[in-house]
Image (cartoon, rainbow, N blue to C red; front, side, top):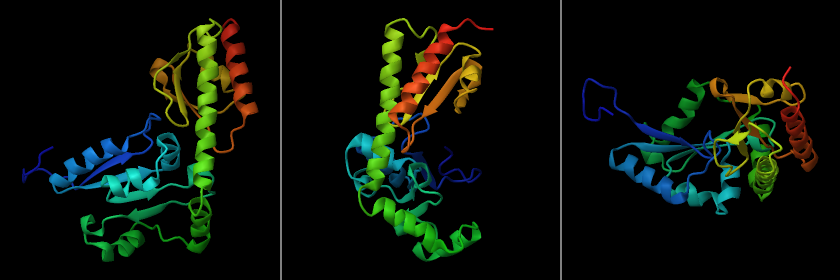
Length: 233
């Protein structure tokens, strides 16, 4: 890392994502270990919580159990991926670890062009989402729909109905990662929208959302079954 080397830029923060980009969750204990490691070296720990609600639904613990109580210093509190039209919040849990202290944050926000006009309308969404259990209900539904997809596809693979489909990551929240035979993803995208994760190895990422329905999942599974059963053109 170059710590203590005057010829290298010195790291100031460790940043992690919860849930991760691979759809997996850090446990509170793992985050505490990372926080302790960072703090011992004079660094802060930032948690990108774009899908933090999905992690809470998976772990079955309060948000603070893997944020404040686990040593996170700054949190990006996500809303857009869990039902809000727009908006995220920066939550400073330990102002003493922020460069310049808490008094500097409003100016950093302004310098970063993040001072939104009529911001009370954005805040109103966050209050609605996090003021009760709506964040958890939305995220729990997304997680359940991803698990429904995973379970149905696993059954199809076991029955030999989905040749060439394989999973590449655990499904711990609302993401399913899989590889498909070449060309299959493009044929599926004629009906459904999703991204290639690693096109070089035909790996895709399927995300379930707060408004994904059982019918959506069942239709997608049937489309996968149909495309995999059909001979390639």
